Image (cartoon, rainbow, N blue to C red):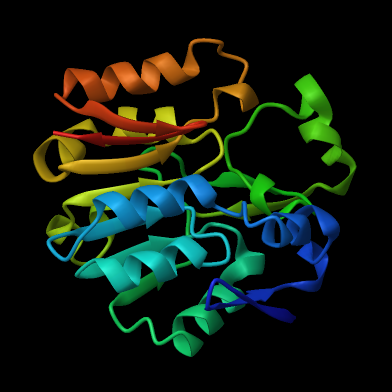
Length: 228
């Protein structure tokens, strides 16, 4: 395990992912840049946030300092220890972490991992399309038993979401429309239609949210902030 300090946040990186693809993101201060802007500008102490796709916990740390509470979920089993260390050593006392994949319908999910840490996904479809942008040969797959969203303790206290799930957005929205419509007032989401075979993927995600009266307030690259 390697550790670095990035914008005053302690992060812990498994050896497999400690490579220039990731390190360059830190050196050039572009790691999770868009989501960081949204969290800094639009989230506050009235928010109880569900974050799905924690990765190393950097956005989790930013959320912890801005909001009332955070439930954060990361499916990659290789990042479980990294996130525990991040939460403990950054004193993120209002964060609860689950190492799981969220699905209400699947009995098991094959979770794809690659040496590119941000490529982990249970849903992306681009191995055949573009060889996961050159990382396909590094694939390792873990079979995971998912957690149903409503089985998460205190899930009904949530009123905001941050999603960065590499192609899982549409399925998550389709499975959890009732919960989102009832509970969620603001969403930060990264849309990954470029990883999927459906060319209308991003538009379908945005239509579901629009039908629930969410409006796009800000867009940075492929990251969106929407609010009711």
